[in-house]
Every structure is written in structure tokens, then in C-alpha cells.
Image (cartoon, rainbow, N blue to C red; front, side, top):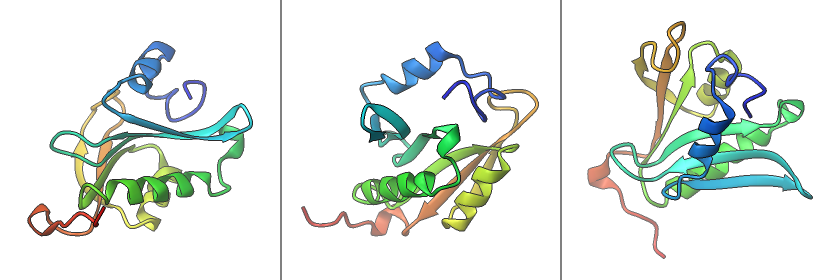
Length: 140
């Protein structure tokens, strides 16, 4: 993860990435091919932005083949069981990811200026099925 974009520009260290992935309050889901990790997604279902996709990572040599889309689609199904909203952030310089999220129905709902690094902003995106007041979780 930390050897490819956008994490190089965001200056994500190995130790900080490992800490995020080991947070017991978050859900980590990976796509494996044998023993190799092809991609993963990290979800946070707590707090004000319950339903937050914190990290999406596809191995750089596997990008552009639909794995990111599949991970997000799976995460949306998981999140929509507990929340009417899916949130994620994307770096202002990450044009490919921004195009993917817009294509998948996400809308920009805010800008966090110089949030991670001084040269770039983070854009907060949301995909919604409606307001919390009308949310009905699916039957168990």
C-alpha cells in the first residue's frame, strides 16, 4: 500500500498504515489469490459518519480491472445493512479514483482543505439511500 499512489503523495508510513489496519473497531476485508493480497477495504461503522470507507487499496499491478469497483460494491452492500449512507474521502489529486466514485454514484458533500498534506485537499463523498429518519435496516 505505502509503496504506491496515493499513499506516496499522502506520506503514509508503513507504521501508520499498519496501525489503521489493526484497529479492532474497524472491519478489514481482503481479496486473496492464494496467499497473495490483491486488494482490501477498511470500513468504519461507528460514529457520526457510520458507514465510512476509510481505505480502498488494490495492488498497483491489478488496477483497472474492476477489483476496486467490486470491493466498493461489496462494501456498499455491507454498509447499507446498517446505514443509509456510505461515505469516503478521496484526495483532490487522485483523478482516477474520483472518476470511479462519481461513476458509482457518489457526490461531493465537502472539502477538507489541506487535511492530510498541505498541497492537496481531501474531498468527502457520499452515496445515500435516504435520510436516517427514514432508514429501515433489512430484516435479519
